[in-house]
Amino acid sequence: MPNAPGPDPIQGPDPSLETERHTQITPIPISATPTPPITKPRYYYFAYGSNLSPTQMAARCHKNPSSSKPLGIASLPHWRWFINNAGFADVLPPSGLRVPNQDSESAHEIPVSGSEDTVYGVLYEMDLRDEKVLDMYEGIDVRAEDSDGQFVDVNVRPKEQGRGSYNKWFVKAEAVKWLDEHEDPETEVNALVYVDEGCVTLSDPNFEYIARMNRGIHESVQLGLPQRWVDEVIRKFIPK
Image 1 (cartoon, rainbow, N blue to C red):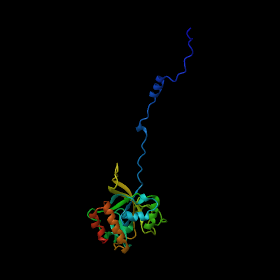
Image 2 (cartoon, helix red, strand yellow):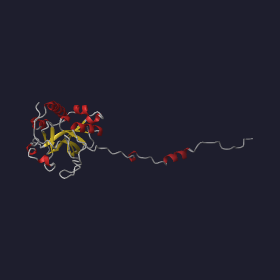
Image 3 (cartoon, rainbow, N blue to C red):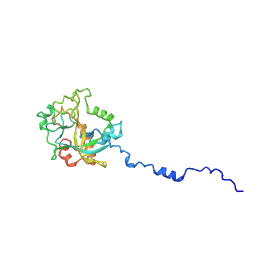
Image 4 (cartoon, one colour):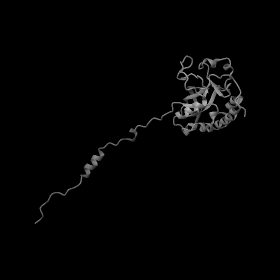
């Protein structure tokens, strides 16, 4: 006598259902994951004096090594480069972007900066901690009063120079050359420029400054600072 049929053996899930369940899941496309935007610096530091030298920058900026890494070459159209009566490099803003002392008779004697009428410099992206160190080297008066914006917009010149050796200006600079590849290279950047508003008389450089400037010239020309501009502008003040 044949055995009576017993209960069906326990089986796993129906493979067809399993497959169907999986195929009903809509995969999330990779493109749906948002790509974080590239964070651009608030501003770059535009060096035009002895800080043209990354070697000097590395000796000064210890908080973050990237602060002394040169990123590019830029220019300030219609600004003027000169050695002031304190014996150091300085720049004079274009007419219409000056405080009264920068429109003095002695300031008007500062020559146009070469055939291009521009000032070239090296761009650095400063860690804020290193920027404070640089402020000390540049002699910034941290207790200076806020600017009233009467002559220059407060966004360009937030503070008075006070008793400091230089003041901090924030202006537009033209990016001439980037040292690393950029997917979307900027042609205009916000730049921090140290400006001595008080010493606007042409003078000779301090003796110790000559060697530091020559090092800065040599290193920045290797990065792309135009040699012709150096010969036309800086060499009027800095002997080899």
